[in-house]
Image (cartoon, rainbow, N blue to C red; front, side):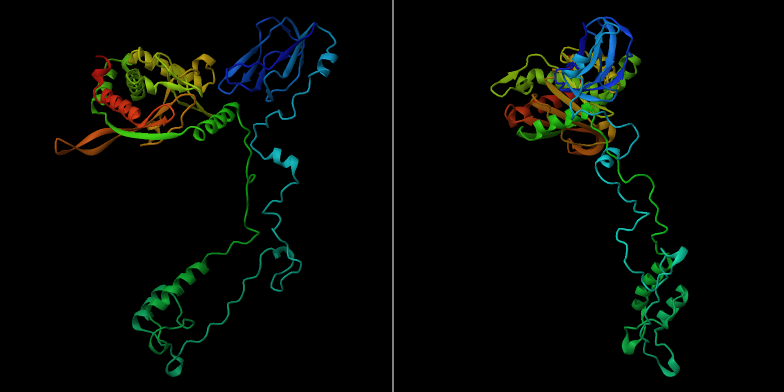
Length: 448
């Protein structure tokens, strides 16, 4: 008996999926557990496996098509089996789920719904109904003949028609090749002075550049391109609307002296590859320990209650091609710097390849977003609901500060905490940042 292959919910938040690639062809034999296709979810590219044995009788949707969860995507059955009745009951994908446009960047979807736009280089915006008298016909029709300038009023002249001008104006005109014959003077008795030549010079230079004509303006390529939303970009958009609007957010910023943390990292790197930890690893470790001391910041808003977590799971924001994903370093407060560094490198690599498992990017209790490697000094991050806070980390910079009444150059780091005011009060957030600053300014406190 034929079995439907449907789009499964491959992640907890998945509402629709895009079939990236079929791994089995029509007519090919399949067994239970075989990979039928790769599907792009809202977070990763995952495998859709067979739930029955037989032959893949029909690929209902093509590669690149996005359909809602539970939609029919294929049929498995016995070779030669009639599946017309099954197809009639659910073969057509929903109208809103159409195949994604081809990889070639173009405005094809818009063109299919509207008349073709006229190319600016080929057709003027408004064609005149009559030819102006000064425009020639034939090959040069699009290039209007230069208009003749209106004769300037003759400047006052002295004896014998001699132009009145100051010695300085004559000198400047000679140096710049400007004729005084057409210049109106603004000095006494119409005398040409220096300021009269300033405007003439600007006009002369502007006139030297050839005016562009419609025949010489060229446009290459298409005026715009429509980029279809990927599953991860759709989810980001949906989550941001849930966060920045309904969540009453306030921000707390502090500056941290990173000299000792800098020295500690240098010492660790000297131990070899195993000691190669990043400043982000150090910040994650310090954040986890600070959250352990301030559990009210390690919490979720749950509409009718607040869930305060005893475990610390840090979401680490990672930039991927289509947006952002936050793999989770679980029990970060209990892990060593070496373990955090190893987890972070592994997660970041697989996140960019879209190969994370759902359990590896869900369930964080607090998040850290670091843009310091991009040269950003300070920023505010958007809370990832239901979490109540996120830490935005800038770059470490050297600046002049006063210590013991003496100006010194120190390495400094600015961090900003975004807080959900329904869960975290100003004093609670400030106390958390104070603990975080203490840990980063005294790294030995993290292993004490």
